[in-house]
Length: 141
Image 1 (spheres, rainbow, N blue to C red):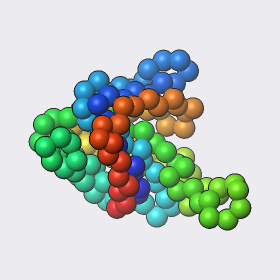
Image 2: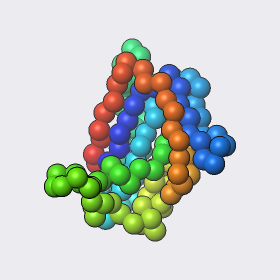
Image 3: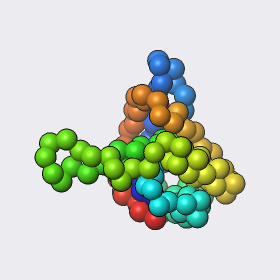
Image 4: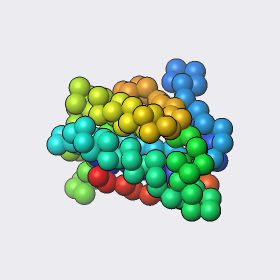
């Protein structure tokens, strides 16, 4: 699994003109991509990493200060643009494989005590954020 993690002051995701997920305080926006070989074990490891990642103000984690997370599925994280001008998506897991694993990340975070907002899997989403720092990391598990 791969995640792009951004420290944000606020973030939201809109589908069909309706806000489906938002955080309006400092926390993390997490874009999650799934590849073919990922398992629930990777989902649990990613959730634990996100919950304890010390990138918030004062080197705090979400677990330290009960900061919220906005988790959004993002198959394009496994896009490959090394050749030509059109990326390929062959490394991205198909929806029936990816959706339960993205949901597993969310469920694991909630089991750890996190406040989690989400996007809508497979939807055309409009994501807005105020990147704080800016801090953006790529996390692979």
